[in-house]
Image (cartoon, rainbow, N blue to C red; front, side, top):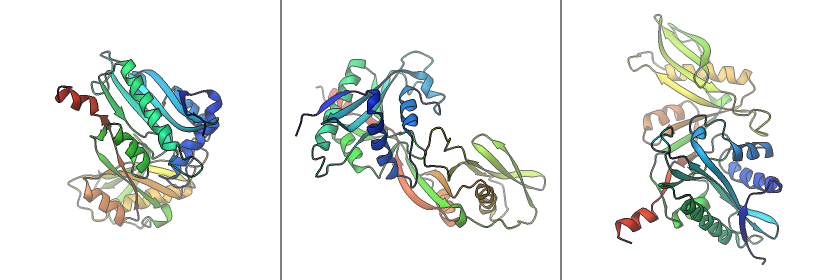
Amino acid sequence: MSALTVRPFHRDDRDQLTELVNQHVAAVVPGVGVSVNTVLSSLERQADEFITDSWVGERATLVAEQRGTVVAAAHLLRYRADAEVGEDYRDVGEIDWCVFRPAASFWPDSGEAAQLLMTACLALFARWNVRARYASGALPAPVVHGLPRNWPHIRALYENAGFRHVGDTEVVLIARTADLPAAEPLPGVTAERTLGECGTRFTAYADGSAVGFVEVDTALARPERHTRATGLADIGNLHIEPANSVAGLAHWLLARAADWLRLCGVDRLVAYETADDRGATDLLLSAGFRELTRIDRRWQHLARTESRKNGR
């Protein structure tokens, strides 16, 4: 077997890198893939992260290559240390995402490639001299953020390198719009469709007051970016007023949203809830959703911190 090489990303790696990215996306969400243009654009700027992206001072993409083939890759960010940067991000280095092929008969050295790549990532953090080191799995695709549990090979790589999960766990749910509640009348309740913060908003009114709303985002698949996500939308917000006494209001709102989504040609709807909020998850399950995956957000490199505590 020829030697493995870890080097900076070159533009002519773009097709192989996109293939690696799409293999990982496909393991998380059905029927979604991204274009070469999406991947290349995300290496230069993350337009969807309109707050944190402006805080990035440096970006680097590294690949591990063997016999002219890219077998692993990682994208790293260094956040500036000035006062304009949010305190949690100030002077932080982050592996924004890391991908590699699990070991197989035709790529027996992929695990070694991933280890060499991780060594290079940690060395870059050391050169940047960042205050703290974090890792994620935020590929430039809908739904994929944090570290999905569908990637045990990435989890093992992070853990072996000294990263530990220190953030929240998010439950990702998905439903076919055909399986969501039917749009039946609800006595005394009317709906209004407007533009909301996270997409199209359906607001329920009873006795002249807003008693709840749901927002759905159908712009996950901009045609110039995503090649296979045209039938996908997600719930940006679902809120029911605590004092509301209208039974079945959440299902009624979801029914209105589902009817609209079917008119848009959307056949799948995604929702996100924190793992601790069992009530919200149960509500969605009762409306026709199923659990798609769980995502562990925010991984911190603790090896150096633990060494300092031990006096080494």
